[in-house]
Figure 1 (spheres, rainbow, N blue to C red):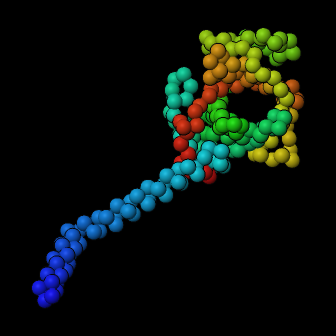
Figure 2: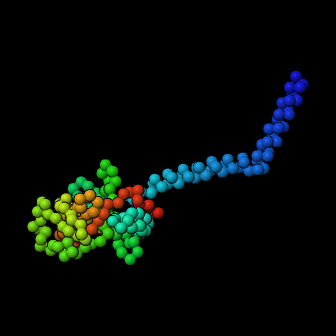
Figure 3: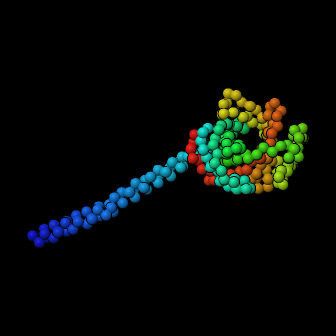
Length: 215
């Protein structure tokens, strides 16, 4: 019995010695640091999931990758958040400054998230049409812009709410034309006062959008 007690005491001293050596070498602390680092990474991943382009407000900063045929990448700061109402659909439009020029980011949530970026506003002359031609558009109407042919895709009427103010709606009608791959669009917009404008837009994958800050 005495020998067993002595053996247990010796083993106790051995375990104590090993633990103290681990503590001195930083191994015990290292395990705690690993747990803290894993927790921080988990919190950051959760934070990244919460930073959605749908939630970005005026003042927010975003980064876009692989935009358009030139695969552009750039940062942009949101200077206004607007709303478009098309039938029962509500489409968010972020007006953004990319440094010297503006882009407009349209965001729609249906079964999945769809995002388009309006890069330029070509003149009607560059599309080979005039404002008077719009009333004569046919179902198989085509447009040509920058060497690409666009086909009539969609027509509807809508309401624009500047700065998301639904108490001051601005009605308009629009014609969408898409390329064969439905990755590029020309949209002809006619406002209630008769003003006509054209927008050139491209589809961007949500995964190519990084939100740095919401506002």
